Length: 406
Image (tube, rainbow, N blue to C red; front, side, top):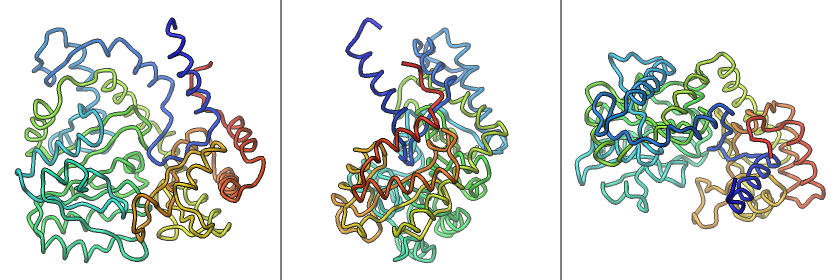
């Protein structure tokens, strides 16, 4: 590379990824083949519109690639193309959710989603998000144990009568009862949007219950437990698909990122292989093993454990706040983000750390290593010596094989 300054940054980042334990619940490591597709000449082409209806010529192969991505996405989740359609063009999860609201909720209409402090996402109607500014937002939370109270959700829905109810999360360690959400939405005449960005790989592998029998629209990113490139997709029932498509383009976006669309097609292919189902199952086994090991070390966990890929760790027992804990962990090469817990009063000084197992599972770690990771987390937060050295040794034992050599 002629640009030596940029090359230096890229090589340093590759080295950082190889030598750190990535416990960010929303991150993963893509395959070497996906990296190759993302760096292909497919990025050179404009393809505004949809297959067969482009605004530029020269899109024959891009039409075929986009249709392939759609076919594979539907097949991966066991959906009939007679009942469901999928849009693979959203640039990320946030505009995907925004597109759904734009398609199905009138201006000034009502959306209801989970509170950010309870584990929801900004785009589920938080006031600082455009979704909380362009539409009226009413939000549900969790109980004192950190669990969704479906009767309370039902009461709120009947009181506010939203146009759309969002199920899904960014920091909720338990299974979501999509059937109950679907029934609640139906009872008040609302659409049910299931945002499965975090658990899509688990849903596809049947490790987590599917929302599709109970939802009108399902959104997901591709880069978390699905282990694909950074992008998003929107599944919608056939009768809603034209509204969703128009909201994505020309409503919100221009030309799709063709290299990402192709990489998504490859990710869906990879996720359809038998070994991926074993991988998804191992993600959950690892999360449960890590949770149990942390509890044995004296940590308190929100909801007492996990059913999926993530854990909410309460660090107040060590007289720490989430920000301080995050910095202590990063200093020794453990990457995990601060996170609010349900009873926190300020989002600027959260009490928790969110941990996730997708990336470590991709590196081949299993339950035995999760006990070691728990020990490293405890050591880092209690100022033990040589933790950074131990982290590096663990990373060397389980290298990130898809990373380019430097």
